[in-house]
Every structure is written in C-alpha cells, then in structure tokens.
Image 1: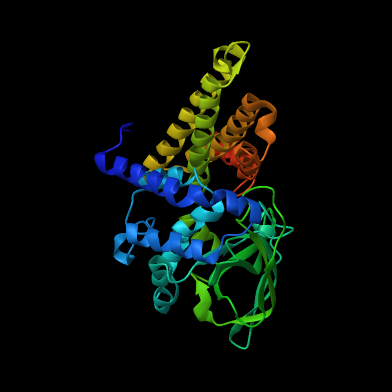
Image 2: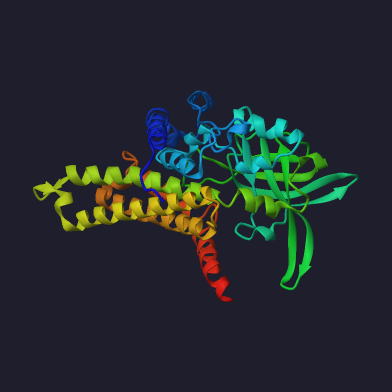
Length: 386
C-alpha cells in the first residue's frame, strides 16, 4: 500500500475540504439552532455539488458517476465528515445498492438518483430488529400477483427528503438446523404509494437537522417490478453492496476528529493558565499527543480497508476494525477536547459540545461496536474451527 496521495487524490481532498469550509460551515449554527435545513440551502448545496462534478461520485462512470475508487471515495467522505451531517447529506451519495437495478428500474431509480433528480433512503431497521436483521417483522405476502407490505421501519435517515425508499422486508421463513430463518426481499417504494406513509421520528441529541423518520406500511401493494434483485435475495443484495458502507462511518469519524483536534490544539496553544499556555502542562500535552496518534491510526485503518476493496481482497474484518476503532476514537477525541476546554467546552458558544454529542451515535448506527467485534472475532476464529 502506497501511503502517499497522488496529485489527483490530493486535488480531491483539497476540493472537498474547501467545499465543506465554504458551503457547509457557514450554515451549521443556524441548523443547530433550528434543527432544520432550509430548502433553499439544501438545493444550493446540491446544485453546487453537481456543478463540481462530485454528486454521486461513488457511482461508476458508465451510469454517470465520477467513478472514484474506494480509497478516493473514502477521502471524500473523510473531508465531508468535518461538516454537519444534516448539510452534507445534500452533497449527494446515493446508495450503491441501486446498482442492482435492472431494466426499467435503471431509468426510474438508478439514473435519476445519480443525476440528483431523485433522492433515496435505505430502510432496514425496525423497533424490534436493529442489529438482528433476520428478526424483522415488516413483511410482504403474495396476493393476486402483487406483494402486500405490512409493518414499520424506524431510524430511517434522510427519509424526510427521499423520493423513494429501498426497503428490506421478510418474505418467508426457512427451517434450518439452527432454527427458523427469515427470507428477506428488497423493494423499491415510491413516496406517495397508497398504504405507505412517512412520519416524524424521534428527537436525537446527535446530528441535529439530520432527521430520522418512521415508515408505516398498511396493506401497501407493490408489483413484481418493484423488487430489487431477486425475490428472497435481499441478503445477497445487501452483502454485495452495503457492507462497505461501514467505511463511510469510519472515514467521517476521522474527518470529524481532525476538525475537533484542530480546536483542541489551537486552544491548548492560546489559552493561558498560571502564566503559560495550557499546552505546556503535561496533563494537556500528553492528551494532544494521544489524540493525534489515534486519529492517524484510525485514518490508516480506514484507508487500508478501502485499499483492499480496490484490489478485490477480502476486507470484511478490516472494515469492521476500522469502523469500531474510528468511532470509538472519535468519542475519546471529542471528550478530551471538551476536557481541554473545561467548562467552556459545554457551552453552545463553541461547537465542542456539538462534536461531543454528535460522536455518540457513530458507535451505534451501521452496526454497533459490539456487532463489529463479533465480525472481527468470527473472521479470526472460524478458520480454526471455533
């Protein structure tokens, strides 16, 4: 692995960082106060991203994307991680799972999503089925040639702006030696479909303005044309396209940690106590040293996992390691920064308390830290028969 960036990769980093600093940072305080992203600001961010050529940059060129490699896309996400989730959502990175679209689905969903004409949202989590995907109760049954969906989803990010939804539901049960196991099918569901409703979710302390919603299905009837992939093939679609999304959480955690670290470093150099900068005290300087070491380590773990994907190498364990380490590193860095700021760190006059709050959710969504540790240990122990 070459640890240096090519000229093109450095240009990507510089371009996205400049975009975040000039188009995202100025609106963060207003979004934090209101919990809303005004439509005109959202539209402006999307328009400028499209003009920049970065909208749907995670998609291949043959469908209109920028065709970035996994490493290059990780660099994009790392820089976006410096900014507000609610705002950088409109930078536009549709779910790669849309590459599973076939036939007419490409014209109705894939291509409009890549062009920024339609926005998607992924719907998997349920009140009683978070990490336990096969425990989902939202189901679909055959009726007169259609599928009839019933149940609900929650914690659905981006649903308030989505034009259509990628929904995973149970479509059958298999008996296995280890007990019954539900079959999962993926559906494409348009907003406004009869029997389908989107409603407000819960008030989260993390990422204000980046809302979660609840989806309700009440005898929602869908034709076969809305099945994404194969019937009962939801896990195959999921495993092919979704598992690498954990890299996104890891890279964004690195970006946010670096921004937070910059605040800690500058404050330690400027804030004086007992006649000298607090950075001269070992209690602070050693925290600074530990923070940058952990940030660099998380950065390398993340880019290494992306590098393996680019070369077609197995990366499941490496992605899990990057996700668990980077998100837990972010928690430590934000907490240490707040400690360095002292009481002022908890005040809304500084963004430190926001970084601290926002960091908490990263260890939960896209697979909890416990799930990542399970993946890591399973990958190590299975070859030994354990």
